[in-house]
Length: 135
Image 1 (cartoon, rainbow, N blue to C red):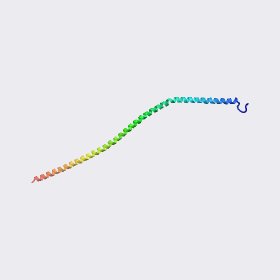
Image 2: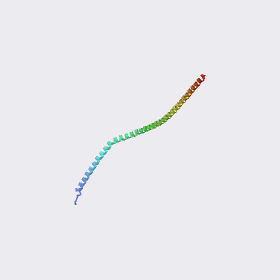
Image 3: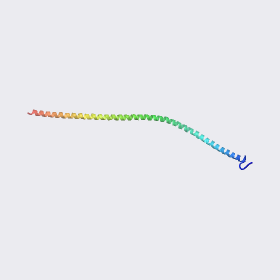
Image 4: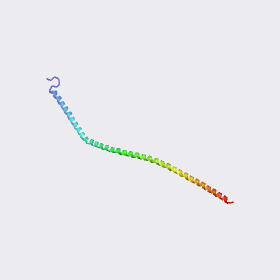
């Protein structure tokens, strides 16, 4: 006998039916969600694989890039050292050229001075020779 709410078959069946409908709705929703997730996963597998391959190729290229950068750095270092070495050599050669030019000018001045003194002596000798000839 029924007392106050649902009877054994009346309300319980309705509750069970509603529960099964809700369960079916949730299950079908989950099944649709799984299908969408599976489709998305399948549609993304190709691009993910391509991205992985591209990344691997990029890593290989970046390895070559690093090697090229190291070679360029070594070459640049060598060029800079050569520049400073040549600059030092130019300074040394310039100083030596100035020294040589200074010595040459001093030598020319010395020769000119000697020539001036010789001319003076010759003139003096000629004057004294003339003075001695006129008696």
